Length: 157
Image (tube, rainbow, N blue to C red; front, side, top):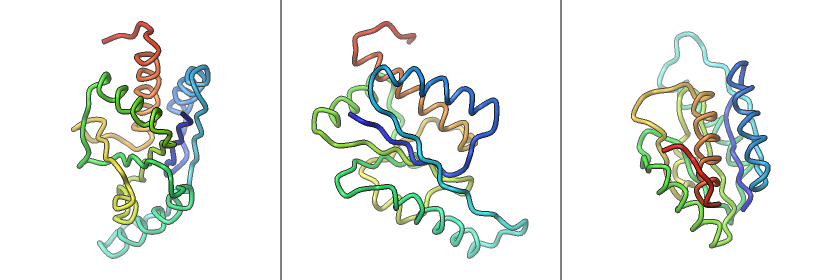
């Protein structure tokens, strides 16, 4: 089951090194594609209207990488927070159903309403606020952990 992550923004070091490490580990289980779309510049005094414009532009870029048959999982505050075993079982269900999975991570302002409307599921990695670059590393680690669980391999609880 190929997995794709579409994320807003580029990662700086050392988070990029952590992301590369998990991508390397995941390569033994399945194909993983990470697509970075450029984050939009945010003026210093960001009005609600400008916030919406920034999110919409980022959302349009994200939606260009989503196909009709993809299962889209949006990372957002409103999402479910499953434990690792439940997350692994959901990935198994999607894999068994033949749906390519696309996780989407918005920029610092979050995801555009159009992206959330397209989402088939919503996932929250934590009730805590974290930078979107760190969320990508946490997501990669959890996908890696899910594949270990599904393969019957040892993982840390």
